[in-house]
Length: 402
Image 1 (tube, one colour):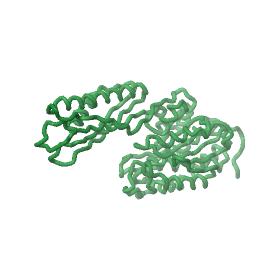
Image 2 (tube, helix red, strand yellow):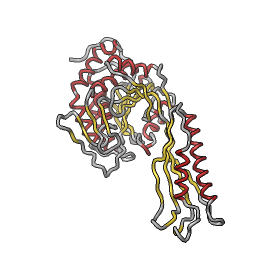
Image 3 (cartoon, rainbow, N blue to C red):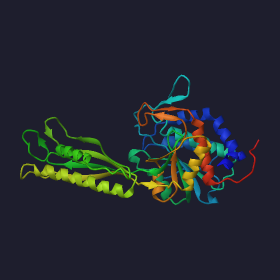
Image 4 (cartoon, rainbow, N blue to C red):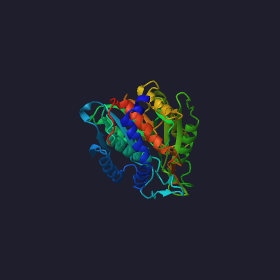
């Protein structure tokens, strides 16, 4: 890492990143102000494609899934390092995504300003610095803005990217949100489902005694809450939404609950899914057991809403070690962490992958009051520069232009 930092082209790229801090913030504000709900990322993707071209990337295009990507270096030069940042936000098209600055100009406020406008702006700045500084990387680098990372997107963009077989990946760095300390090398897998109970319904007085879908939802929620959750590997199981019914004086013919099940371990996730399914079936059976004899049975349908794989890039892997060394070299503390990001998918495929924040600090993520503070903002992008250079390889010597 010391040799990388001393390399004249890397030093030139680092200086360019630091000098363009105001421009990076302008790009961050501009991209954040483009609405990009999951499934409707087209405007933001087209905008990013233009920024990629301006930064000097080649072969910039939108693929069939809606991802936008471009190349630094020859695609034929071997397996590529992939730098990815997701395009989508959790906010619907009806949310005002305009960006506000505070009095001193270092704090930006707006829905999605950190997650993931910061990651997208970092990609643009990093691509421009590497290209214009002519850093002699040994491997090609693919810069990608991906669709469908949030919620119901179910990692649709990276599933397409790594399922296309258009290139061979060497390593993946997902740039997601703010921060300089966390190195995410463990992918938290998840199963999202809707449990829908259907019964005869009826008048709340005249039909009282029939199997009640809302009562089954209540039983199910309580049963799920009582499931023992393992701490090793870290796991969770949550009822996250409830719905159903048509009126104040009607027994609902249908009611539902949504569940989010997570674990760092693949086997633990499978076991939890089985326990949840059993709890839901028992709630159905318990409600049917108390119904008036001869009335219709309550039915249970399980609808999949999403499935994200767990994954791990071991601490000893050179990619994780490069990130650790970059933090040390820059005088930053480090935290090895787990999260659910675009890096989950390549991890699950055995492709080395991590996720990094892009500098600064942030809060109120996934809320309309989301904010980004530019403390150590450039340092986060410099860290991504060093990790990219470490895993792509840099030829020695060569002074920067001018």
